[in-house]
View 1 (cartoon, rainbow, N blue to C red):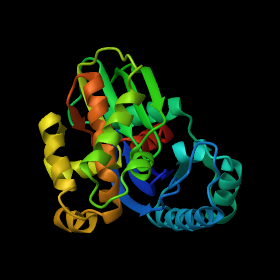
View 2 (spheres, rainbow, N blue to C red; view 1 turned 135 degrees about the vertical axis):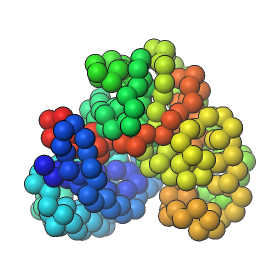
View 3 (spheres, rainbow, N blue to C red; view 1 turned 90 degrees about the horizontal axis):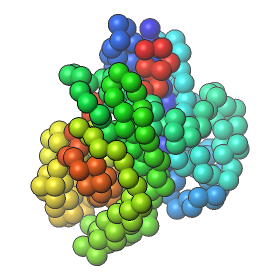
Length: 290
């Protein structure tokens, strides 16, 4: 069964089409557009009409791509940016009228559950014990803890992500040490009152984590994160992007995402292993009843 997921996030809108068979997903198509819907948006603020129209066009293109790839069922989800927008109903109406899709706006709990499902069910080797899945998105960070067989037992959704932190603090290119310290402090303060249960292993999902794999490999510990931060801040984003074959817009966000991942890893007391799947894969697995 070919299933499609369109994920409308704070920084990007992505389409993923995969073949779901025998408990496995085989990717057929994936495309991404940087839309930065959440740029400058505060909780309760309204997404500008021009950005809504632009995103509706992106969604319409991605729906067409998914249908051309043979997707028999397509689910469209939206996360933090749309969740907190004053005009979320207007946004969803525009996606239906001009993008051709009904949008499901995920609450924090459902976003955490689907990210956990996508991360833990697409592993090459099953993980034993209690697993933490950290999903640093553009506008929020979800932490979900549970077991591969039993699912989520504990979760939190926190109102900070790479887009929010970069917009709030990282005004220079490359960012200064003081700006990076402000991001680090903000992330640690947001997590100060969180008391998660102990875990045996932690995995990271989301755009920042996936991009960091190109810089330092599959494990984000203290040394690898410090090395990645040095690489990301040694020159302008366009130069770093060319060196590592990344999008310059992603590079501008990555130091903030990295510091959010660093803070959550310290909270959990574990290095973060970068997962192969996340929210979109979770949506497809859920859609296929797997």
